[in-house]
Image (cartoon, rainbow, N blue to C red; front, side, top):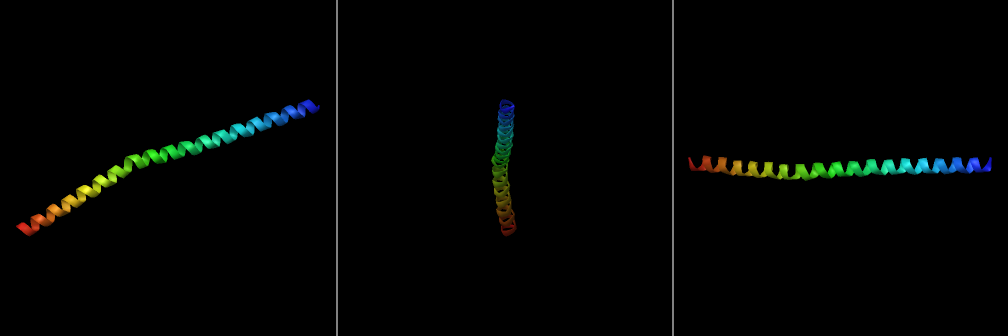
Length: 66
């Protein structure tokens, strides 16, 4: 009976460790997804800002020169 209880406790500990590892994996995957989005959207935002600035300067230059 004592061995059975020890085995059961050991199995429960293993299940708890597996659950903890799965939770850590989900956390890491969420972090990777966040970093992937940032790597994509930051350059897009910079490019949009650059084209907006260039367009504004060109529109002002066109207004002033004509």
